[in-house]
Amino acid sequence: MTRRIFFGIPIEENLQEKIAAWRKKYERLAVRWVKPNNLHVTLIPPWDEEDIDSVIRLLEHSTAKAVEPLTLQFTRVAYGPSLREPRLIWAEGVAPHGLLTLKNWCESVLGVSADTRPFLLHLTLARFRPETFSSFPVKKLDESVSWSQTCSSVVLYESNLLPGGAEYTVLFRRQL
Image 1 (tube, rainbow, N blue to C red):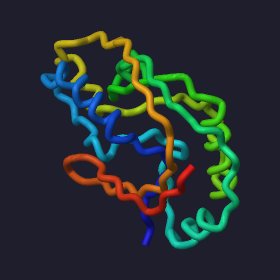
Image 2 (spheres, rainbow, N blue to C red):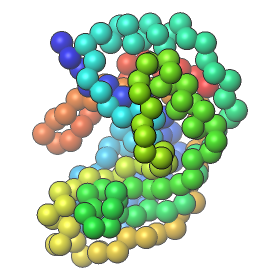
Image 3 (spheres, rainbow, N blue to C red):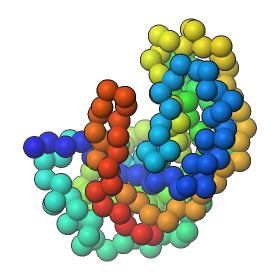
């Protein structure tokens, strides 16, 4: 059976609380907010996998690449991924060098082709259909924030698509 999986960094509880406080200002927007326990930074986008056990064995037996402690810093919340056709609310930041090292390590261990697009540190907070944007009372969203988190682990997630939005299950966690 094929399952949809991806690799990412979970958002810890203290940052989840800051995001929850921030989003109260925008509760009237017709968006589907990402549940706090589903917040994450994607390192390797989703792919369909039949042999999850083999992927987990690869991760368990790989030699961890030495990575300095990573701090993710988010400085802006905006509509994304483009202003012409927004469909997300996300927090953006500058990716620390060590994050790119970690991403490259994950790709090499898993045998996943490197993404050709430049890596953009972002954290999806909400999703919506582009056609609903015209009804939003807030058309411009460009808010400075000062959110940070030290990365303590990377996670292999399974993505289960449900009518109310995706639900993510942790399949494997590696401490950094």
